[in-house]
Length: 298
Image 1 (spheres, rainbow, N blue to C red):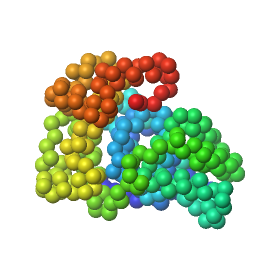
Image 2: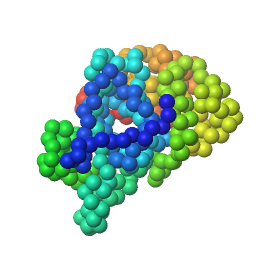
Image 3: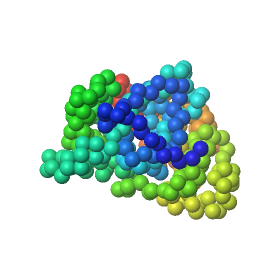
Image 4: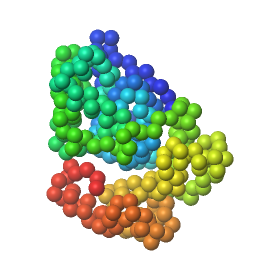
């Protein structure tokens, strides 16, 4: 796999590209395009990579990704439960699709700021998410002037509720990579995503990326700001959270099933990242689900 430039093809008489995906699993390449992208995961779960920011995604997630920001959504094929398990709605559009003069007006400054914030990826939650998802579904069903009007409503909602449109990355903008760098990162991330529950050695991932272990270690830290081992723990903890939310497996079973080989270390790492123990995490999740079945992950 390599970082790919995606040519977005919209109709010759429309400036917005809308696609409704329905397939066996999420397996698109690590790619980028000049269009911004609003993605709603109608069904499915897996690992999302936006720039160098790694996170879990699941049914109901809504995200806005900025222009030319590398990204992909992927999951293990074994998670799939049929040919239509992975379902999504994606809206792609140029920042200047409404004309450059559109962003010179005082009334649209908040939209311009939204597009700037989208360069590090934005996760949309709460009432804003529910409103935008409803309008996104409408966009997929109409065309022409109606589609444009609903699109403007979406931009208005997203730009007026910054507290529910949250940055995925901690920094202002994700580290930009050259295509050569991104190819290596893509290989490393995909290997980690597929084999995270197994014993993984740095030298094996380095070999897949076409580097020595020491060179890859330095390269990885430069690209992400964290060590390879840190990312491996992050992926395993994402899997552990999913297991805790979706199954009744014991804490010990979750620990060993997700690649940890020591229960005390698992508990320590989990509390370091999530701020609470696995047991408390599961209890809070179940309480939250009982109160609101549409709740987002903790």
